[in-house]
Length: 404
Image (cartoon, rainbow, N blue to C red):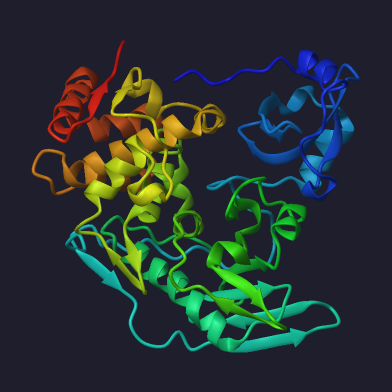
C-alpha cells in the first residue's frame, strides 16, 4: 500500500485557516521547518531520522528530522519519544531478559492465569495525586486512589497477557523493567490521558522510549461510583493486550523486515484472541481473527473492517515497508499484518509455524531486511509464497491477492 504523503509547505499554509480539532490538553507545540514555516502538532514518534507529527485535524505527518529547525531538532534530541523497538533513553531501566529458546514448545490451546494477583499498595498520597500498586510483574502508577479489589480485578488481565506472551513458542521475552516491574500509568479520565501524551481516540498506548504503557481507567472498565470506583469485569479490551505485547517484545524483533507486518501482526494476534476472566482461548481464535480483519468483529466489538476482498500489493514491499508508511494506513496494514502472521503461525505448510520460527531465530542472530526475509521464504519465490497465502485464505472465504 502507498503511504499518504503530505506536502509540509501546503499544510503549514492550510493550517493557518483550519479549525483546531484537538484540545490544548493534547500536549501540542509549535514546530518550525528550515524555511521558517510553522505548524501546531504533537510529536508521536521518531523513526529512522523521520518524525511523525499529529496535526490538529487528526492527520499524521511524516517529515525528515533534518528539515526541522535546529531548535526543534534539539527539542527532539532531549525530549523526543521513540516507537516500539527503538532504543530507549538512558536511565535506570533494567536490561532485557536473555533470549530463552522456547521454539520447540507446543502452541498453547488455552492460557489461563490462575490464583491471586496479590496486589501490594506501595504509595497512596492524595495531596500529590500519587497512588502506586503492584502485582507480580507490573507496577500501576495511578492518579486516583483505587480499592485493592479493583486493582486486583484488572491486574488479572495484565498478568494473563504476560503469561500468554511468554507461553507463545516464539521467544517473545523482551521488555525492560524498572525496579523489577513493568511500568503502567493509569489515568482517571480520557482528558488526563491525552494530556500526558495518549494518542487522541486511543484506548491505550506503549511509549517505547520510556518503556511504559499508558491507559485511561475507562479502557479497563473502571468507573466512578460515589466516592470510589468499581470495575466492570465484562469490559472487553483488545487494545490493552496489544500494547502490553509491544512492551514485552524484544528489540531484535523490530528490525527491518519484521517491524510493521510482524510486530503489529503479533500484537493484533494477542489482542484479538478471545479473553475472559484471566483466560486466553487460543484454540478458537481463527474465526474472531478473520471477522476482526474483514468485518467489524463479532457482536460489533470492533475491528479493521477491510472486507473479504483484499489486494495488498507485492508481499515483499509490504514486509519491507517503512514503519511511518505502515502506520499511515492502519486499518489495511494492521489487518493484513494479522492475517499474514496468522498464516505463518497456523496455516503454513505443516501448520507447525516452522518458517516463522526460523525467521525469528535469524532476527535473534542479527539478520534483518531482505537477508532475514530470505530465511522466511525458505526456498520459495515471492510469487509462490503469495500464491500459498491466497490459496489458504480462499478456503476460509477471504479473497487475498497480491497484484504486482
